[in-house]
Amino acid sequence: MEEIEDKIVNEEITAFQTAFKNSDLIFQLLDAFPYPILIFMPDGIVVFTNQKFCETYNVTNLNKVLGRYNVLKDDHVLDGLGMREFFEQVFKGKPVTKNGFKVPINKRNLYSDIRGAADEISVRNVSGFPLFDEQQKIMYIVITSQTISEYKGRAEVIEAQVYMNQNWLQKFDITKIAASVNLSADRLTRVFKQDIGKTPYEYYKYIKIRRLKDKLQNPNISITTAFEECGLSYNGRYKQFFKEVVGMSPSKYQKDFKSDK
Figure 1 (cartoon, one colour):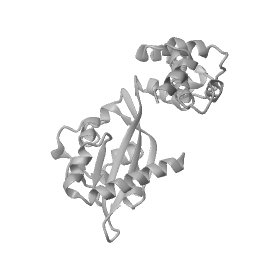
Figure 2 (cartoon, rainbow, N blue to C red):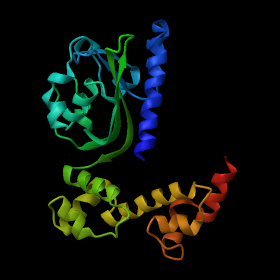
Figure 3 (cartoon, rainbow, N blue to C red):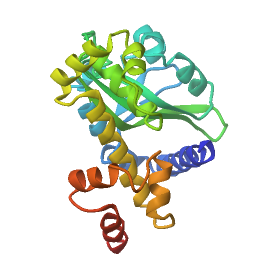
Figure 4 (cartoon, rainbow, N blue to C red):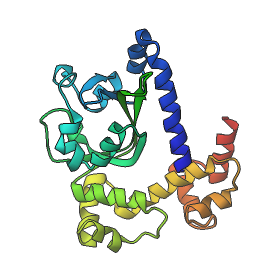
């Protein structure tokens, strides 16, 4: 997995290095890039944000960001969001990827004085890498990110969702999940239902189905194996639950997915 991530980062670096050789087109290309992009000078000052970045982080006034915001002096991002080591390594010239970076949604505007309580969390994979000039001195630092998942609800509900997504292979245990967010099982079930519209167990089952769909998209494994890799039995109740949720049997889903390729 780490080798794949390193390969992706290296491909990004090569693409950006090549693009920067044609400075007339680079900013047009970056602005159309489908992921948020932020570019810093070696001293930490922002010099560019693309349109996707502004949309994602609710940046409405670039005059407060470009040429002014310095990430190396923002303790909220470095320590409050746990990104100090990430940025320190990148600004030393090392490509770095941080998976599972949690961004409070109403703190998305990280580049202002807005610091509110979160009722939604965005989990992202963030990559950063340096671009060097001909003398191998750092010219720019490029940061990109990709949203993996988003969670809504009060803080305890969000943390319970994250816990279940991180431990989806384990057998459902409401006591253990509730303990992870410092609530009783009854209390968590009640507030979870209020915020999400599902009980924790219902939410857990939908995670299983989503993971199972991912497995079934692999044409090289059998349906039975796909179920087993999700900690399920093909002859168990999830076979029928899959049909109820997806609208077709697991075998038809795999067959239709193959035929679409």
